[in-house]
Length: 37
Length: 270
Image 1 (cartoon, one colour):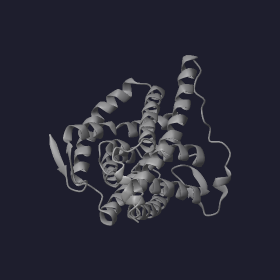
Image 2 (tube, chains in turn red, yellow):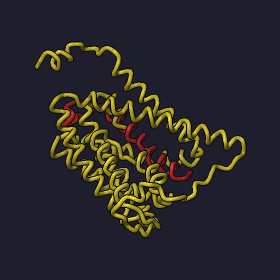
Image 3 (cartoon, chains in turn green, blue):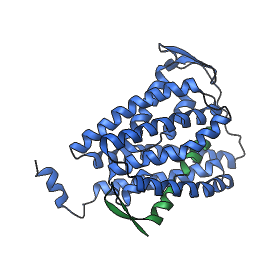
Image 4 (spheres, chains in turn cyan, brown):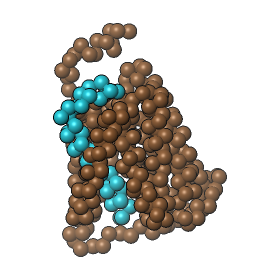
């Protein structure tokens, strides 16, 4: 499913970017794990 | 995250601006949870925030300048290779050590709140009640500023710098660190997003919404995965990922571009 981005001026596949959004959860998990040691 | 967007063809400036919006969204719920547990040192957070706002202002202007001279994409790539390389190697070494010690059955060394460092003795001393510290306000301001600057230029939350810096440099108790850094990140990245949107016009709301939805869905799996894996294994995995991304950007910097004529507009166009 392609969607046009107004500012980037390009179409993208929504599912690829949904997956990438999911990948970002690692950053809070990482911060928490750093604080644990 | 910003490099992943750039790999997928999003212009670097849009990736950085939009990522700031995504970080605000993904940090808010964590910050509220930490606030409820009383894990936020408001005074320390405010000093970090003041530094962050200043750093962000400078950073956004720098982005504007670099875009005007057409060097922003290159600058971001070099910045990422440098930072990801350093962080990846440090994380890999630290987590490999932790895994080896765990296998040998040794308990991890406990860090004690030791002597005062020279940075604590600078002027403008302040009392931070929640962190039980009486130190100069200059180091937290400087840390906040670096984080704000990097956030504006590279589109990172800055937790990866702020958390170790607060633990080792400021000696803030570890339970306060995560809450206070999230408090700073939410406000600084929100400010950065607004600045990018108004000054550079590089926040793509459609992209930001897609990423936020992905973040909400991914968070459900991330928490489950985080509970199954040990902290040091998670850090080891993440270090590998960080180094891979670093190599991928470095590769893009040194290989021949597919469209050689893209250079002519910069070199010959003057």
